[in-house]
Image 1 (tube, each protein chain N blue to C red):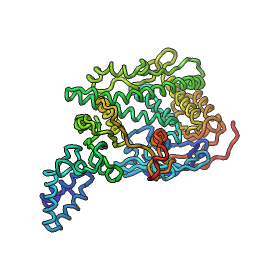
Image 2 (tube, one colour):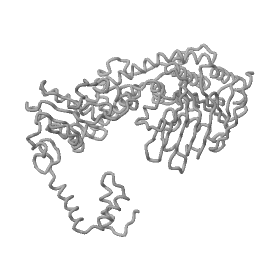
Image 3 (cartoon, each protein chain N blue to C red):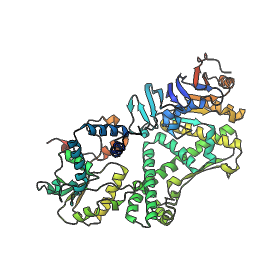
Image 4 (tube, rainbow over the protein chains, first blue to last red):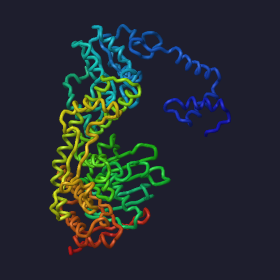
Length: 209
Length: 376
């Protein structure tokens, strides 16, 4: 599959294959599909991609992707501006947003601390977060990071940084961890189940209201 | 606990094999290179999710094959357990218990304890400290789940910390706050693991001494001394006082990942002063102590795998060893030997029926279990 009848074709295949999760076989299928479409549709596809990289912006407040200076979430006055939910990336922001359970604002870190991947605190949007927290308007920050060592380490780092701000009334919380909804207890691993026991919640708070 | 059936597909030199075992003793006999040890290794795989001999999983797939499969049917307290290990080239290993896949292999380790005695054990004496740490870790993690989890976390933190030290050196900079978050997590884990290892050695040592004396019929004093940077006390202080060196070396120089065991006989280190024979007795005593220790802690008799031990020991020691394993406190036994008559005679002499499997180039022929006979 390495020699194609056309160089242009091959180049297009290479571009598609450079996308995450796309192998060469799928890339060939996509390019052939492009060729079958009417040229107007392919042009629109290409132009959208160019516009995407040229025109997309990152919200100056929360670093979410946006069409304008402030993203639609930060610009929405109905949302609770006293609470900030800290997420690793835009994907996680969308995941939390899709729960329909959260009405506050976000802060996208742009990654988590992982020296093995060459990512340190300076590569993340931490300074802008600390800047925001210096004002009194924010009363709670929720850590919604992955339950991995790197995620925990990032939370730990933020906790230390936030403690230095000397704002004792600022509430720092973390999303709860434990047994998934619909899971049998016997199949939960010890670490998760142990954590669930330690972080048990008052039953009344779990009732659907 | 015992293994009733084993089936293999494309494991090492076995295109396909199906074996049914005696709940007492089983022998794999055949020429060198026929695949006796591979059968022992398959059993090891099912217990500890890896080969005893070759840590590279992919190299355990038969040459030219795309995948391998090991399946074992166990009897665990009267309940049948089906353990499945599958591996496709270039993919991750899949372990299933009764058709339910494990999310983490660590959850399986410890369910089916096993002890292997093999000629390669001499690495424990001759090689670097890593082999001896692996020895301790593999025992403790067979009965203590949180130990293995902590150890995995510890090693990951050290890897991150080392990466950070390298970055500091590369960029000629230093960021204390970044290092601190790793150190703060490292210290409690190290303390915890140190206590567990320390406890283990102090319980293990006397059992070991007892087995050594039994096998050698000697009275020389043998001992295992645990050496760790954490003996100095406050590990946080040790870490910060070695910071300069760590930055220079670009890795974490102090911690439980540098622990070692010193084996001594009389007052001398076994590594340098013991004879070949003494070293072998030392190793076998070490493994038998491991067996007894796991049995005492878990209440389960581990499966004992004896790889080619008759060739390496003199007759009197073989006899002592066999007397030991024929007693009640040992469970299911698997043994490999090049001489079918020898192994049959030895087991005949101690009055244990043995099922013999003839192995030739990746094919196994099982002989029916001989009728129970009178002890000699």
